[in-house]
Each structure stands twice: as C-alpha cells, then as structure tokens.
Image (cartoon, rainbow over all chains, first blue to last red):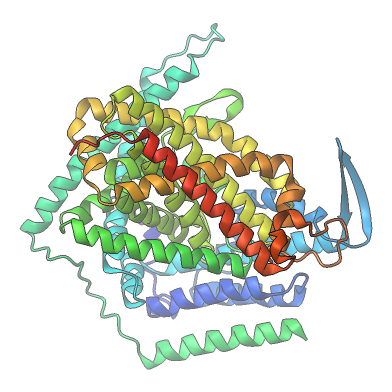
Length: 263
Length: 318
C-alpha cells in the first residue's frame, strides 16, 4: 500500500487543484453544512447540490463520475437511519408488526430517511473531491493556517508520513499469520476464538513495539537533518485574488442554493 | 477498493456527515475542541518535542492496528478500536490527541466518518475511550499484573459499549433514528465487538508488559491529575452501566427526559406526557426544576464515584 494510491489524482493540474488548500477545506465544510441545513424533502436543493459536485468534478478534470463511483463507502451506515422511516408522525402508508412493536411507515418518515441518505451521500462526494485534489501535506498546512493547534497538526503530519509504512507492517504481520495458519481440509474444527484473539493481540503488541522503536529512530534521523519542530513546505500557501474570488463564488452559489431550495 | 479490507469495519461508530443535525454536531465539536485544547496544554506542559514524532507514529500504529482482525463465527471478525490501548500506553491526554489524529485522517483521507460530525466521532471514539480506559486503569495502578489486565479488558469492553450508546443517543437526538430501535440494535452488536476489543487489548498489553514493561509502568504512574481521571472514569462508566439497560428497557422514560430537558420536541405526538417524576416537587414543574433534578442526579453519581475511589484507593507507587 503506497501513498501514491491516493496521490494519483493529486498531482494533476486544474483550477481546483491549484486552489489554495484553505479555500478548498472551508468550502468543503460549508458545502456539508449547506446539505445539513437543507430541509427534508427539498429535492430541488439536493439536485442543485449534486450539480455543484458535478461542476467541481469537471473543473478538477476528474470526469463527472469520479466522486459518484467512490461515494458508496458511507452507505452501510444508512442502516442506522432506517428506523427514521417509522419515527415521524403522519398518515400511515404501511404498518409493520414486529413482535410486540407496531411500526408505522409514514410518508414523512420516508422523506426523512431519503433526505438523510442523500445528505450523507452528497457530503461524502465533496470530501472525496477534496482528498483527490489536495495533497495531504498541503491540507495539514491549511489546518495550521486555520488555527488548529501546532502540536495536533504536527502529530497528523507525522501520522500521514508513517501511515503507509505501518499499514505495510500490519499487512506483513497478517500475511505471516496466513502463511503459518494451515488448515486440514477434512477438519471442520476451527481453533478456539480465545486463542485466535491472543494471537491477534500479540500481533498488535508486536506492531506497537516496532512502531515505538521506529519513532525513536525517526526522531534521531530528523534531528540529524535539521528538524526544528515544524515541517517545511515549498508551497507558498498565500491567498491570491483568484483564491478569494473562487471562494466567494462558491459561497455565493451555496447561499443561492439555500434560497432556491426554500422557495 | 478490494485491496483495503479495513474500509469495511463492522464498527458502526464512524458517523458520516448528514446523520447528525447541526446542534448535535456543534455541541460535540465544542466538547471535543475543549478537550483537545486541554490535551494540547497538558501534553506541552509535561512533554518535550521528542514526544511529537512518537505520538504521530503511535497514531499511525492505531490506524494500522485497526486492520489486524481475527475471524469470529459467521463471517464477522474481531477488531481493535484502540482508544483504551492508546490511553493506557501513552497516557490520557496524549491518547486523546492520538485518537483525534486517527479520526481526522480517517475522515479526511478515507471518508471514514464525516467532517462536520467529526467532533462527535472524536468524542465517541477518542475522549470517552480515554476517560473510561485511563480512569479505570488508574484505579489499579501499582496492583498486580493480572488485576491490571482484567481492569484494562473491562475498560476496553466498556469503552466500546459507551461509544455505541452515545452514538445511538446522538442519532436519536438528531431525529435520525428511533430510540427503541437504535439503542438495542447498537448495544447488542457492540456487546460482542467490545469482547473482541477487550481480548485484543488485554493480549496486546500483556505482550508489551512482558517485552517492554518499562513503557507501561512509566505511563500509568507519572501522569498528572490521577485522581481526577479516576473520578471521571468511574463516573462515566457508572453512567454508561446505568444508562444502557435503562435506554434499552425503558426508552419511553429516556424520551421523556429528553423532552423535559428540551433536547427533542415531539409536539404533535400525544403518547408521551411530562411526568412529575423528573422534577423536584417543591419547585413545581418547569425547566428549572428539571435541570436542578438533573444536576442533583449528576452530583449523586459524582459523590458515589468519589466514595468508591476513596474506598478502593491504594497508595500509588511513584
């Protein structure tokens, strides 16, 4: 697993890629906020939100389907919202008896459920676009400019740097376990869960120690290279007129979207 | 995406955007920001710059450790959330910062959990776990290895239950789910996920204690504010233990409390009435009385837990 799995799209050039990371981060959060603020059943509003996502995808030269294809990550969570179907007062469409419960499906409930899932789906797409068009170190600098505590940004930057190495380490441990876990084809018996848990725990402990010792070496190596407490970047991270303009434009569009959805 | 098996963790705890309403997201961002600011303050006070790479690597470790699973019956698998392990091995404040980083990166890079609701995710998976994990573990600091491991396991189990319970309550208070469905559903799933968490945490801690005992004993007894963590840990644990059965068995009661406290408004629904049970009779009905009743309840819980701490307190080795 390598960092360039995510960076594949990040190095392309486009108006969105070249936008100042702060603007992208803030607009993404505002877009998600705008989705949450849309009333239930504001289909026009959701449609406009989706067009906004498409517009950004096209501007970023990723193709209109880019975010849609990757946006089903959060969908399993929709399970948690299914009970919203029954939670709204209103005219009954369908009554479900489940043991001692009588659950009443209402139109308002269905609209609420659909709205929740749509909000989540649209928000995930924008977050995907943010990741696809911004390199993570730039995002970390955007945090710093947005007054996230220095320590936290430093931890996040370090974490990103070692994420892929340690994930590889974990995959290596998993592969080693696979390789040593033979199973006799005729036997249906699987080893006791407690034993499996213990092996897994030992693997986690092993990973912990490897990480701990690595962090020591990392720190020495960084000191040797002149680390003074903060990470440096070649990206200037200054707000130009163009960045302000694009940010303002996006905010205006979101405000218009909110107004149109409420008419 | 098939190359990333960890994308599909069975933990229904990374809330995506859109599932919480704005007040809920805002309140939990506020709590989480407060705790993060405190954590930054305390870790800067007691630690040097050397700790920052350590915490970064540890955050990456928690992320990678969440990939390591073991198969349990019926295609499900045991997983690690890691909050308790982080709090015990690194100390509570560092644990909070590490878990915050993990959740931030999962949300930003993998869309595993939302951005606007990240405050709630940080609270459920980073702060609750640190309070319960470190608080309970600290009560037995200096005791024998077996006792510490048992308490760590219990704390790990309880931290998952607590996270699931609070997630369920957040979803309900946002009007996303029905209380009588979501609480039993979340709790019944996470009772088992919690067992996996407990087993892995205990086995990992036992391994670390055996190989590098210096890492753990150093953390458990040097952190500041031990008594505060113990009190907070016990109070939160007690609250979870009391609230979980109540929320599953008597959702109506909980719903009434929420209406009384003004969290939700069920205007048109005539099923629930405001009962005087949750108010102080001398003050009559009304929000003031209910709030006072709530504060009184919280004080009783706090007093009880401090009493328990006193009873069980052992001289902590320094």
